[in-house]
Image (tube, rainbow, N blue to C red):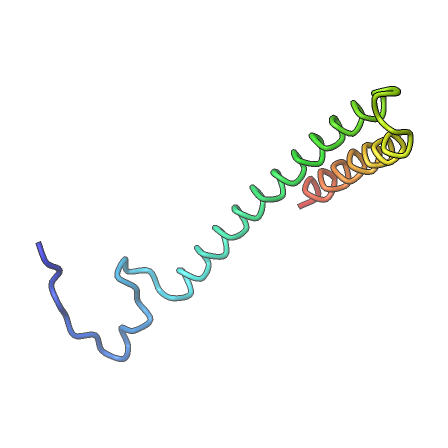
Length: 94
């Protein structure tokens, strides 16, 4: 079935096919962008926690890992958990 055609006057241009005004549509898109940004931030926090877990495993891995790598992993683990907590705190204030 084909869509019917209609004439749109200058006053109707601000309306979309769903009947929402452009400002309503902008608001909907902004809300969607914020929701998606929240999901992205959650993924970042989860990855920081996973990085911390792997880094801690390497830091405690003993002689199987070179001393310099263990030290970097220890510092990275500490930093990752701190950053994840900072992100969590920022998001809790919003």
